[in-house]
Length: 262
Image (cartoon, rainbow, N blue to C red; front, side, top):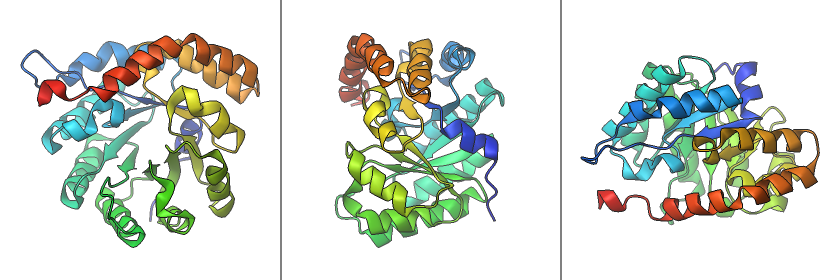
């Protein structure tokens, strides 16, 4: 049976900082280069860090590279904040990475939604259940990028034992509100579209948001979160506007990631 630490639930309501994946000049992952990023983010007050998320080029990494990233992230964090470990791709890859993440000391697993456009809702539920079993008691964070699987399927996913939260990465606030209404009140719903979508998603019930900005400007992300927590949406929007150029540059880099590896 999965036990979910209240401290993890609390951290999920904050900023989930998605760590980048550093590479060296030979195009090999160089995870120890994350040290200054990790230390700066924790020092600024970022609540939880994520290895093998989208900003970490998850789909551009091999399974072995993903394992190296989560191992290094766990060592660099050293228990100062919870570590969320992304898993996904084929079921065998996902389960292998779940086991490696647990061995590394991850606090929970973030399950990437399968990108297969033909996957059935029932198949997604079975996929997450298998990964949860491989995690052997680690709590689960669902990463939903496509709400087209339907609210019934999302409700079923939330009933899987060990699901602690949902990262909602679809620009559909009203649909999120309905999903929250239908779900377990203990589940933490996180805005999964970074700072720019945090206000509308938080307005309908999301708590906290994901951030790639923490890799370069963690203090600013923390200020945005504080404004939203205090209900000061005007200040939050001003801060988001002030970071727009940085966010646009990061999105541009994100669209072009992987070119070095092609």
